[in-house]
Length: 305
Length: 265
Ligand SMILES: Nc1ncnc2c1ncn2[C@@H]1O[C@H](COP(=O)(O)OP(=O)(O)O)[C@@H](O)[C@H]1O
Ligand SMILES: [Mg+2]
Image (cartoon, rainbow over all chains, first blue to last red; front, side, top):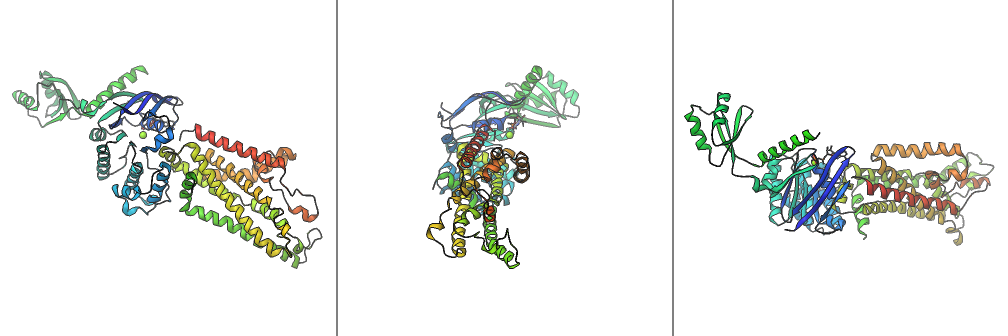
């Protein structure tokens, strides 16, 4: 499959800090790629480098297979961290500047503002906007010139639940139009809800790269609690169809094998005279996978240093 | 219209601060020139004499002297557009719009050129304004204007353009390095009016002091009024002064380009 961007050994040092280290990554055309990682893991630095604002210490990248960086950037719609506009200009006038920079016509401005629900406020100055409106204007600016790729850095940061849902819907709509999206986020939930592919960054290194549906496998975790957790843990560990048991504040989580399910488990517990006060099945989801990957990486990182 | 000029124009067209600074600058110049003749007349009325000359007879605003005189006086007020340049540059940095411009598709070189356009606009407006003022005041105050005299010293307008241009480029450089609006303004004022004057006053040797940036900028148009006390003045732009100014223009623009190129935004 063709890549929208191909990144090779990208590295950025800030003095002693290795913000990004030897990152190699190909983002397939028309994928929604989630770059996932905790705060400080190097997501913004990575995006800054591929958008030509942060100068890499080494490594390279190629958008659309073309070395013309300026023309490439004109085809990318992007917001990095907070929305950046001229506070004293209106929404529409801010977008005019972007249209001029990207060399597209002003005709899209009203339409795009309407798409993000800002049409009525188009003549109001940016500085009068609420955080949610600023974020939506940023999305509008990214969409303005019908880009081939969207690069979004924590696009729902600081928004209320309604705002978050709106932004996610917009991203999904865009993806349906066959565009490639690169989304950096520290929120798993976000990546799981909108992405087709994801990579995990940790301490500047890419420690996982794959498809989202590959990891939402069949094995699943069941949360259990009872009045006597010690006894419960003992019994769960003796249950033949489990991979592992771990305690998660005031309850236990057990990972079942494919041969078992929540019904069998509760039958087993009744048989041993344990009445669960809580019983809840959760699929082994991206979050679990993510935490596992991070834990493993953290252990490796700790043993190296 | 040139795209980069258009982009810069979009940024200032609805920016009230820009129009306030521009209006303020032109108003100050107008008021100063209006009061010059009034001041001389007032001195004459009080019977004062400047070096045994009747002040009201000094042809300050008459062709052809007027061009040298008003361009020199206007040079005192170039700090006003300079402060706007500081605001424009440091805003782009603090609002992160410089970074966003690059992300959206400007190159760093484009950004530099768009800001040079801003500086050209300011320098050109100042020059055109002085041309109009010079023409009008000259026609009013010159008793019987001779056609050949009218534009005789008007090359000082070109010198004025470069004086403002170079000072604003110098300011651009400072703003880019310092990044913070208030700090840059403070340092520019301190350097222009305190630090460099003290250094050059100590050094005294003309050819060395002329190498300092602000001095080099001001040397394009030398102090004109001593001639009314019948002393020798330089009523032309010397080749070496123009050369030093050109050197600074090239040096500063290259440094700005280098800083933009190497810096993480
Ligand atoms: N301009 C900078 N100077 C020094 N260190 C920086 C700079 N920008 C980022 N860093 C460091 O690089 C690391 C990665 O930061 P960042 O890319 O912002 O992470 P993320 O976006 O994943 O939260 C962090 O340790 C951060 O402190
Ligand atoms: Mg970040």
